[in-house]
Every structure is written in C-alpha cells, then in structure tokens.
Amino acid sequence: MNTKEIFLKKMEHFILDEKLLLPGSKVCCALSGGADSVALLSGLLMLKERLLIEEITAVHINHCLRGKESDSDEQFCRELCQNLGVMLHVHRCDVNAYREKNGGSIETAARQCRYAAFEKEDGLIATAHTASDNLETIIQRIARGTGLHGLCGIPLKRDRFIRPVLFASRQEIEEFLSEQKQDYVTDSSNNSDDYTRNRIRHNIIPLLQELNPSIEKTAFAMCRSLRADDKFFKEECSRTFSEHFKEPMCLTKISDIPAAVRTRCVAMLLDKCSLSCDSRKLRDIEKIISTGGRCHLAENFDCFVSKGELVIRKRKDEAEEVKEIPLNIGEQSIFSGIFFQTRLVTDINEINSCIINKKFANHLLDYDKIKGCITLRSRRHGDRMQIAGRDFTISIKKRIQEVVPLRKRQTLHFLEDDEGIVYAENIGIAERVKPVLCETKRLLIVDITYDENKPLE
Image (cartoon, rainbow, N blue to C red; front, side, top):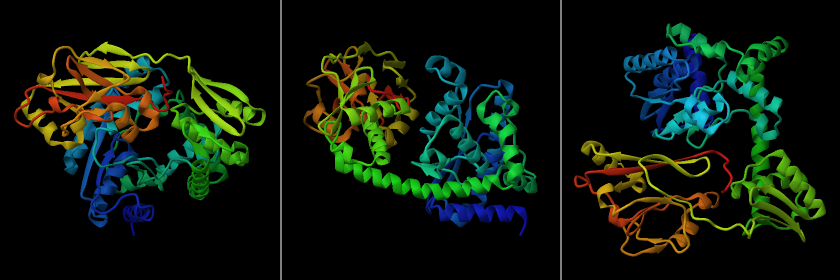
C-alpha cells in the first residue's frame, strides 16, 4: 500500500470512528492554499464516494495581510478548485482595519474574521487542523495557564466544525501531497517568530522531538484519554449545576458542592449571565463562599453569598436606559462589541433568491413597506408586535422568555418605524414588512455579529 492509500485509509477510519460526518452530509472545506488544507480537500474528494458525502465545496478567506502574496494565495485556491471541479467561495477581510476597531492581536482578529465568514457557509465546516497544530495548541495553553479542558487540545468537532485530518502530522500531510505531485502555497509569515505559535513550532517542538520523535502522536493519544475524563467531569458538573441552580441566577447549598465541581458550576453561572470567566473572578467568588459577603464582578454586576446561596445580580440602582439611534444602511453599534449590519438590495434576482432561501426569512424586510424614519434601538418596556405569519400582536417580553437565550436578552436589537416595531432580533419581522416573491423591489437585509464572551451591558 503506497503513502497515498495509507493516508486515505487512516483518514477514512478516523472520520468513521469519530463520527465526524454522516452519509449524505454537505461539507465545506476551509481552504487557505497551504499543505494542510490542500490535503484536507484532496482527501475528502478521494473519499467522497466511500463516505457517501453529498457535496463538497470550499471557502477561502483572504485576510489582506500580505499584499500580493495574499492575492496570490487566493488565485492559487481559485485555480485549484477549478481544476478539481469544486465550487469555491472567497471572502476578503481587512484584518488590520478590524483589529484597529476592535483591539486584540492580529491572530485573534484574523480568527474572528474567519469564523464570521464561515457563518455564511452551509453544511459542515471542515478545517485542516493537524496533530502538529494540536501539540502547538497544548504547549501554548500550558504557557498561559490551563486546566483539564485546555489539555484536551483541539476538539475533533464543535458545533458544525469538524477536523478530519487532526490525526495526521505535518510530515504525513506533506508526504501525501508529494506522492501526488500536488502543489500548495507556503505562507511567508510562518517563517517569522513574531507570532507565539511560530516560536513554539520553531524552537520548542524540535526539542520535544529529540526526546520523543513521535511526540505529536503521543500528545494526540493523551488528548483522547483526557477528553474522556473531561466529558465525564462535564456531565457530573452539569448534573450538579441542574440540581443547585435556581432562577434568577442563583446556586443553592453552595458549600455542599465539592470544590472542583463547584468552580465549574460557578463558571457556568457566569456564562448564563454573559459574564466572562477568569481566574480572578473565580478566586474572589471562592473567597466569599467560605466567608459570606459580596464581590464585584463587572461594571454593574455583583456576586452575593448568604445562607448557603450564591447569587449574581445586576445592581438595582442602575437605570435601564433605552439605546436609540437613527438607522443608517451599513454597520452600526448600540452595544459595545456587537455590530448591527444592514444592506439594501435592489437586484431583483438576488431579492427573489433571498426570499426563496427560508434560512434568512427572519432577517429580510421589504424596504418599501417601512413607514417614515427607521430607528435602531434596544428593548423597551411594553414592546409588542405582529410577527410575520400571525394575525395578532404578541408581547415581546413573553416571546423573549420563550425563545431567546438568557445570555442574549440584554443586548437584543429592534428596528422601529413610524408605525411600530418591524424587526426584533431572535424573534422575527413584522407581518406588514414581510417580503413577497416577485413583488418586493427593495430588500433590507439584517445581519448581527457578536464578540465571544462579551459581558452584558
């Protein structure tokens, strides 16, 4: 059996053993043009019939960070997909501009731009993370401080993201491509030690390979074992959390929970409040669990412990202000770190295509049915609307309680014209602005982008 068949056999068994995809799946490959992503796309195409994959597409994100080199990578991906007969979607993201606006590192900004682009693709998203990437990730987390979950490495799958080549080392990837005489591009930034991951790859990994030439596979095997432990621990914590959680934002009999489990239960409670979880907050909360009292969490949130109950509460003296601005087509923000984007479409073919695609039904408004001025605002007490498809008005508060996750309730967006609400985030559009196929001439499309782990306003 040659290198190609050995690689494909390993890949097939890995996908099946880990249940990464089911027969009839649609898979979109994240294609950078590098060796890992080219091997991922090539491997899946060769296994398409064996795995009964219905459709394979690709997506390329041009981060616009390396000028002509970035454009050259994009062109390589276009030509590769054309030769392979694969549909390719290309997204161009100005990562430097995004970073200047939102802060953080280049790596973080690039990742956020990538995942925002992935959200626009259908089906499973296959990314080309390898066993080598996994080892680098573990080392990076150890350097920054981590626990059991962090030592589990890169997850095999998360939501609709799958990693079909996570079993393979970078060397195996390159040997697979070499045998096929398949070209790929090399990102020049990979040679620089300006990035943390590159310093790990160039300086630490070689030393570990001297101690153990199979360090990547050893680390991958360790992760598999730890994932089983972590899964059991998570299930135990979830069970305990369910037993001790009480609305609103309270853990009862907190001292009865074992310390290791309690820490995760507190983290879960913070997440329910859309509050970030860090070691400082956990230390402060653990301290008042033993002594009682109060600690400050973030802006207008406090944590209280009294009579065995731990409660997270928004300060009562904080006035609830309705945020309100005139709507301008484009990108706006009324909540820090959340971006409300609108686009006006006048091309009749695109309009009809959008209306037919029911996936976006709650984000499309017939612009010509809007009355007077449009306002973008936050939730207001007493809000009501007639949702598309219904012949009666409903209480927004009641509907929020039914369908909106707690962590999103404080930062919901609404559009209002002179006659009332025409759009409510996570709820829908008003019946009177519902677009109609072949009748709507101008379509307003709404899109909202959220920062991860953003606290409530």
